Each structure stands twice: as C-alpha cells, then as structure tokens.
Length: 395
Image (tube, rainbow, N blue to C red; front, side, top):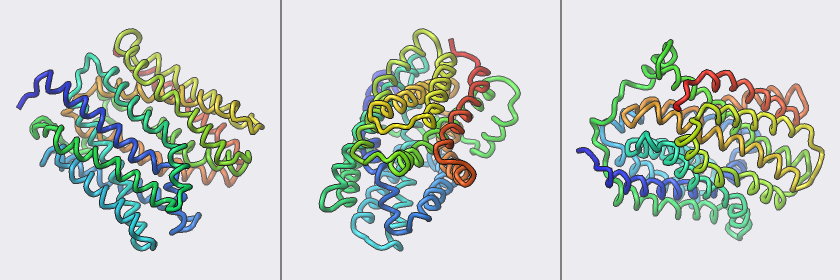
C-alpha cells in the first residue's frame, strides 16, 4: 500500500495533534515526578530510579524496533498508550513503594517509547523537501504544551489531592492521543521498514569513513550533547536556584516559563529558514555558541532577580531550540522512514544522557562548588563545535 500525498498530509496533521497531547501528558507531570517518587524511595535513591528507567528504556527500545517491523508501528503505539494509561491508574490508586515504583518506571518508559515511535511514524509520512518545516511545526506544538507545564503543575499539585490531581490530568491527555492512534492513524506497511538491528546499525555508523553514515553519526553525537545539556539543567538547575540562590518556587515557576518561550517562538521559523535559506550547519554552530556562552554566565550571577535569571535561561534555550530543530531537520534529511534503527539510536541518546549526566555531576559536585557545574556544562557544549562544523551542509 502506497499512501497518496493527500493521505500523508492528513496523517501528518493527526501526528501533530498526537504529539501535542503526548507532550501535555508528559510535561504536566515532568516537574513533580522526582518529588513524587522521593516520597517512596527517599531523596538518596531518586537518581537511582532515573538511572534504572534510562537503562531499561534503552534495552527495551533495542527490541521495540523489531516489534515495529513485525506488527506495524500503529499497533505498537496502541499497546504503549494503553500500558501508559494503566500505569497512571496504578500511580493514583496505590500508595506503597512496592506498587508505586514499578508503575512509575513503566509510566516513564512508556512515555519515552511513545515519543520514539511517534517520531518514526511522522518520518514515514514526511517529505524531505519540507522536513525542516514539518519538524519545526511538530516541535512547536510539542513545546507549546511544555510551556504551560510549570505553572499548571504547580497549580494542580497545590490542590487537595496533590500528586493524584497531576497524574489524573496526565492520564486525561493520553485519552485523545489513544483516540487519534486508533481512529486517525493508518498502519504503515510492514515491508516499508528496513530492520537490521540497532547493534548492527551502531557498528555500521561507528565504522563508516565517508558518506551519509558519517553525517548521521555526527548528528547523533550532537543529539547526545543536547540531551546531556537538558539532563544536567533539568535535574540540577532547579536545585541550584531553590536551595543555593534562594528563589522560592513561585518565582521559579515564572522563570522556567520564560525559559521555555524560545521553543514555541523559534522552532517553526528555524525549520523554515533551514529549508529555504541556510541549511542546518550554520544554525547548528550558532546554537551551540549561544547555548555555551549563556550557560557559562550562570556561575557569575549573584542575584535573585526574576528578570536576570529569566533572561539568562531564556538565552540558553534560544541556543538549545536552535540545536534541537537543526539536528532534527538534518537527521531526517539523511534518512527516511525505512531507517528505523537510526531513529531508535538517535532517540536513545535521551536515555543515555540521563545515565551519564547524573554520574558526572555527582563526581563534579564532590570536588567543586555547585555553581561551577554549569561552567563545566558550558565548556562541554563548546566541544560540540568541531562535530557541527564537520557536517556536510544540506544546502
């Protein structure tokens, strides 16, 4: 079965809405997840839970690509979304660690796998001529959901039922997602996917000396770098601002909302620019430089000003948003929906970053003052410049 251009357009619109509801369901709980699970495992074990989630996500996704090839991506998405809803029900109903921890791990893994499979679905119905616009619009709608999450999560968590209200809202967002998958998605023909296994794909990319495989390898490195930045910032910046700078959570909610604005304002615009004018390479380099130097400013700040912190963190996300859209556009111009293994390798950099970042941060914080962790992160971001410069531009 070959999909017509009109059918692909309709499925892309459905995918945009699916991504939006997925992001709402994920984002509304993202800022309370660690506090929620801390009640059951203790503060010292929260990091361990996230490392377990990351490791299991990688191991499961290394086999999910074979399942997609066997039964089709739509069926896999249905199974994952139903499992996610059941996990949320478990989080709401049970109040002991023996039950909550497994449900929390399952909930987190399902969120990750749904995101990966939805990415794969969108790629199969995309057009390389407008990849930047497609990915830019998809990311804009996703990030619009994330923009609302800090203030919404704070409001819901303050209600009488607390975390139950947050996870109930998360579950509500997955209901329309399931509806879209069930009634608006079409199953991509199984034979459309080329599956050799991610281990084989990783070896092929690692050993490549020239050609598009080298470019794919480089952009996956940048994917890992960006996710390392996100993992470090998401885990350690709230702690730093709250406990070390002394900002209350009411101010932090405002600061984090300001911080996320670039993802909504820039994603589609940058995708359009990459398709129409410059290509991805120049913008990737620009994004890395902005992210690095804005992050290097963090240890120099000694203020509780919402405007000052909002501005600096806003700039870090201007750079991060640029990297995000450009590496997405570049990757999906190098591959197509048949390259299922490369898609899964790219998305597993998210989980890998959540293993690497806490380990490095724990060692760093044992040796140096807290604020210098962000100076170290800024330097690490600069190390991505040679990789970005070595890419073969698409224009």
